[in-house]
Image 1: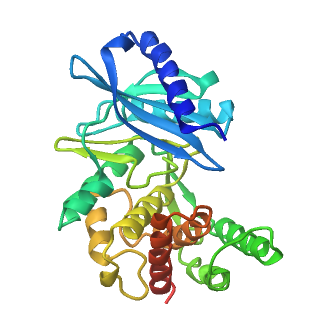
Image 2: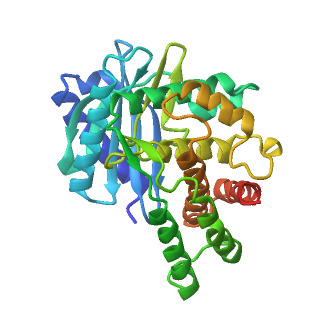
Image 3: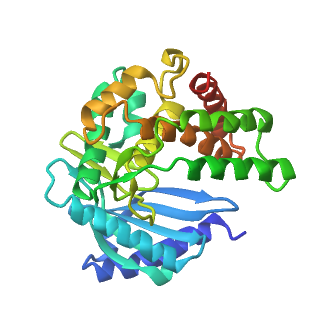
Length: 321
C-alpha cells in the first residue's frame, strides 16, 4: 500500500490545479487541517486550505474506490442540493468551486463551524442542536419533494434476510452473528404499520451522519452527498438519528421499545416538520439502520469502532425488546 505521505503529495498537486481553475492563487494558501481515511476499502483525503485573505477552501480527493461514474454522480448530487438550498436562509450546502472527475477530486467553499456530533459532545443540552439538525433536513427534503409513494418494507426485510444467509454460509463475517440473526428475524414484526404508508419522497443525502453536518451560530450546512435516487425521507432521518444515538446519545435514557432516546426524538421532530414523529416508515427504518450499522461496523477493528459496536448492541437490545 502506498505511504500516506504519497497521498498528501498527490493531494497538494491536485489542489494546485483546482485552485488555479477556481481563480485562486495556490501559493497564497497553506494547509490548515487534514483528515485521511486509508483502509482496504477506502483511501481518501480531505484538506482545508487557508488563504492570506482569511478565506478557506476544502479539497477532497478519493483515491479508492476508483469509480469515476459514481464520483461524477456524487458531484451532481452535491450540486443539486446546493442549488435546492440556494435561497433558504440559515441552511446550505457548500459551493463547489472546481472539480476534476478524472482525478476524483473537488474543491469547495469551507463551511464554518463545528460538526453536529462535536457540538453535542460539548453541550449538556442536545435539544437545540437536534432541532437545528431537523431543520436542515426538513429544508433539504422540502426543497426537493416529489410527492408521496406507498412504502414497501419488504425490500429492506428481504435484504437483511439475504445478509443473514450470507453470514450463515460463511460468505460474510459479523461479530455477534447469532444475536444479529435473531434481530433480523424480528424486523418483519415492525413492517406492518409501514406497509403501504403514503410516505414523502425527496432527494436523499445518502450518508447524513453527524460528522457531515456542520453548525455555526447563524448557518447549518451539510456535505458528502451520495449518488442516490429520490427516496422516502425516513432513510435520511434514520441515518442521522442513529448516528446521534450511537455516538453521543444517552443510552441510559433509552427505554425498551425505543431506538432513539425519546427526548432526542422529540427535539429532532420539533425541527423536522415534513412528517410527524409517529411516522411508521421512520420507526421501521430506524431499526433497519441499527442492523445496517451493526453489519458495517465489523469491517474495521479500531478501538472507536469496538466501543461503538458495544453501544449498537445495547441500542438493539432496547429497540427490539
